[in-house]
Length: 57
Ligand SMILES: [Zn+2]
Image 1: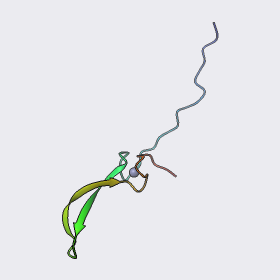
Image 2 (image 1 turned 120 degrees about the horizontal axis):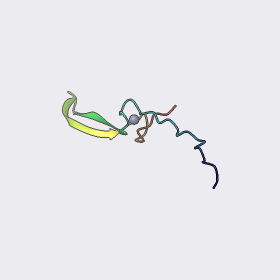
Image 3 (image 1 turned 45 degrees about the vertical axis):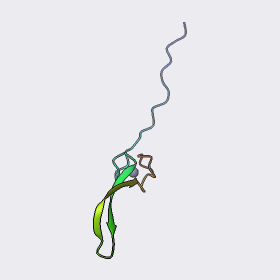
Image 4 (image 1 turned 90 degrees about the vertical axis):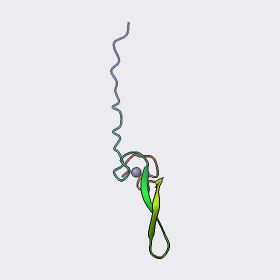
């Protein structure tokens, strides 16, 4: 019987990306034309985390 192994490593802290709240996607408003008429919303990849949902620095 070997002694109990204690986990030596702590799990790395994952910080949620703020702009997308950890989802990796951000809703963006779609506008068209010169008047920038709003035609709807589309989810797009978050440019802050590139879709991973994790904050990087
Ligand atoms: Zn993000």
